[in-house]
Length: 483
Image (cartoon, rainbow, N blue to C red; front, side, top):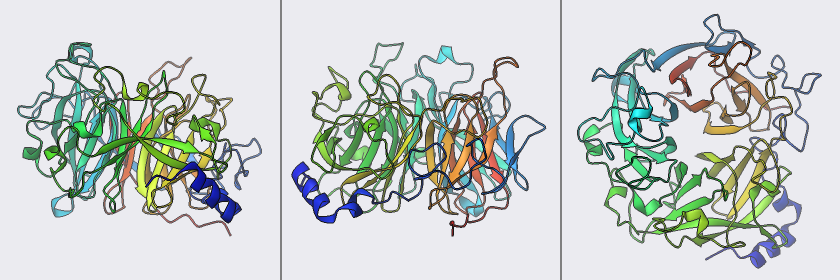
């Protein structure tokens, strides 16, 4: 039954501020740069005070790769052009979303996306076309599977899927597989492609044979996919779309009656199985919200209805273009997602002139039980992206076993990994020091795929360009809540 605007307005009137402020002092509500409360630990210039909270200041790396707090260290697991696959080819480039899984005898298995768009000839190090694991032989992207020993030693790397395009984020499943998402809408015949793209594929890190003859999960729609999470109780899949002109959508896929999730089961579904729907939001007064950038105060709560997608395969028009004005709610740069706390954390990385209101990042929380979407943080537009300490452009996120979130920064200027606690404070974890620009015009690639090992001892993360997977270890601890 849909949560109607009238029902949501009535509920809000009855419960008052308790609804309007639900979750407003949760994981990210007072991050530096957020509109709302001032962060409790700030330096005189308004930036995060690295020495006052978290693990302390980030120390420069003599090797020019990764600045970390005292006591922490990193190890390079894969590096494009340096490390090799078991088949002998170079590790593919452009590392992106990553999932971790417990392997045999204490090892960790990681599925690593490679965000490579367009023809293979455009990339020096595409994902190799491993026999039986290729969807479209013209496409450069895909996933590799990386095995790391318990002591952090890299064991091996092999192809999980090849011949896909622009594998950006994705998500792990409760049954131990990885859903890799194509942030692309090319059809067969466009940009050299021989098959349609814009799909989700399942990769099993434990069994390469399960990935033979890759099959797109067409029931989940064809559009510029970013990330996906699974509601382990209800079986819904939530998906983000990173697109513009017009801005993208937040989706929910409802499985058909009687369907049971499990390894390989999504491949058995008909192309039109279940219901794919897009979010439509409205405020506590029942007013329709056209774009999530309208929310400027952490703690803002919207009710959500789900509107069925007319043509999920987008044969004549992109899915996001199939809705008329007033039918759905849009958002720019819908990026990372993570299931935790009984719901879905969702990132809108930034908004500019293509959105009603500009910002440098939002993190939302969707509560499927209440069918509400709550703004946890809003970063104002960063006036000086080149200044260390300022944060903008949240992208990939994951939940830390030590509490709160780990967020990958994909903004302008300096790039960080940073943590955010349950009471809203933030702290730096790492800074990218690999300058891929020049001394006069430095450029630092985004961080991607932050995720802890199953035992919680190691934080894995990527520097997207040229493509480096890093394992970060140190004196991890639960950051205490503010008294």
